Image (cartoon, rainbow, N blue to C red; front, side):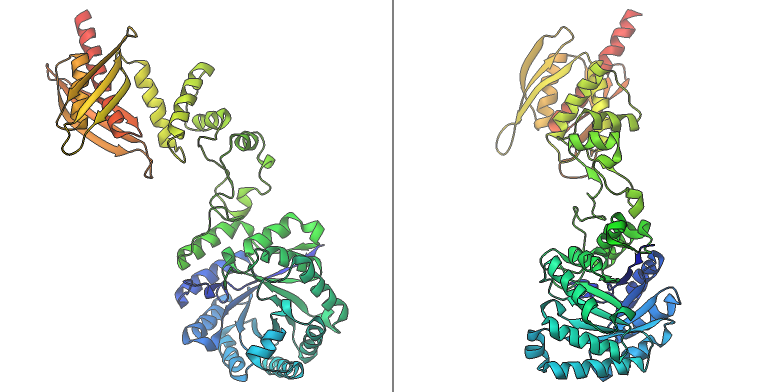
Length: 511
């Protein structure tokens, strides 16, 4: 059996310290309920003395947690802090006081103005005081990543002897390289008397982009608790990301001799929940929970994933609660991805038909970042309209503006393959294009309706135009056309309607 690694979530305390991430009590309770569903081991609910709101949050979260997880309140190594935290934690069945002080030379000298011996005395006093209120006390050695290692050994040993049940070794500034930080953890295990009886926790920051690597190297060297946040929220560049360390441990359980009890299928939901409450969006390429984490745009990757998911995905999207692998259709997509998506939409084509569809797809994809299902539907329908057309649009060019006269130059291809080009003036660019069409087609009609809509979202969406024309006999014919260019869409729609009108006239004449 592998070692159990406790997950200590500090989204509601350190995560809230991200600029703009402040939460009220009700919002904290919503996130806390999600953390409980995820089966986190410890929720650091706040810093009770910092504000009435934090005090209330710690108390309320202690009330709803019951015996499902430990609820923790942060304090400084100050008597009043500890007493207030103890009061807030009275509602919790499994309370923990998290107390400590800075241990690096700069913290001792510049912030606390204490000698090493004075810092040790304060640590001992704080831990003993906290133990008067609760049985579970965590001691943090702030900025341990930059501390003198011999002093770190001394103060951690003093905290353990004073009654700490958990010792927290933070790389508060994200300064360490993973192997150096791992060596610190290993050295503490070897040199601190009694450390085998307590939990070794690590709290790493992402200032150099290595928070997750620091945490995992710590686990490899004996740490049994990781302090982390949803989406990696936290001071400056943030904390270790909960979803990253949990899935890394799951993927490398044997090598790390470790496992967690987190319900991983809740990870994506938790990420979205925290984003919606804090207003801090997750970058699309964020590991595990980013919008692109299971999205494939390259044709080579798409072909591989469609043949076997694990060719390019090491995690099953369902394992983290993601909707599934996404095949993003773009100009980089190949035949396999397009054929797969068309099949999902219910379309099948022989090779010759599909090649035409693919070329039309590339024309659209070259103009857009992403091609959506609605775009594909439009491509198919547009091709069907062209394949049965009497007249097809070959080219249209308009010039307009103030004080210019709107002018359209247009080329149509007839059934016989002949091209006909004309120019016409109008009251606007669409009117000019339609008058040019009328010169070539020469069929009596009256334009009775004209409507434009975007087929998909985004500024680069395809536009679809629907027109209705009334023939001399009163019959109404509908035409549609789609393209990125509204003039082209409009002209295609008008030609489509006229093709239907002409086709009906021919049928009537044949009878």
